[in-house]
Length: 330
Image (cartoon, helix red, strand yellow):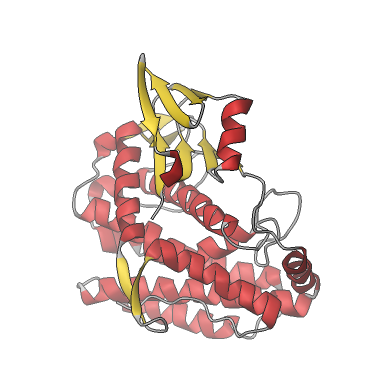
């Protein structure tokens, strides 16, 4: 399995012949190019065209984040698997509103099912979540009859608001009290974790799309517009509850993260470097965790599950094979 490299320090990425290395504090660290999948840059890092040419040749995606944890963009190498036929079929499905709503509905109802899986897991651990689970189940049933994207997104927003209210019951930690969802800037520590985790998930999915024939610019739940990428936002909805949120709960409930891992910035709260490192370590641990896949009759990692989800959507787009989103079993 290829590796992801995370760079938090300031420095310079350089290429020399067929090797690349990171220079920081006067020291060189060589990177295993043949084993690299993605490079994630959080520090102030300089790089030049020669380096980018080599990264493109080796099909390495480079994701950039600014000081405030916001995703800036991705160096997305020249597509090596893109198919004109697949892109045409992908566009065709988007332009047919009935088909687009079917795909969007499948994605978002799968995401809600995974929210319910998370809530039921913590109910078994003694959290008083019956009321929220019943309410979300009722809203989910109504969603199946919705026939426009805006209403679908509105239902999803209401369900997530109800879901977020459950965080305090799951965490039961006065240092991590959660009022409501806030972004740009996050106004408390939980919002900082959600925003950072979601950004990481969006870029993880983007990297997996790169390894398929689909075009990340054509999404179905999130409108295809002037935004650079949207399909990754769609697929990420399915995995945010079972990966990002579970990582947040684990880090706090196991006391791996404390209030000292955050700092005040821009009238809000962000993770400091130590906090980001802790989050990413746990996130990668989750991505590499394997589960038994009932259809393949073998164990696969969560990272592999993301790729398989994209393949399933591609099968639906190109061959009209029924698309059923991944719902976790715990």
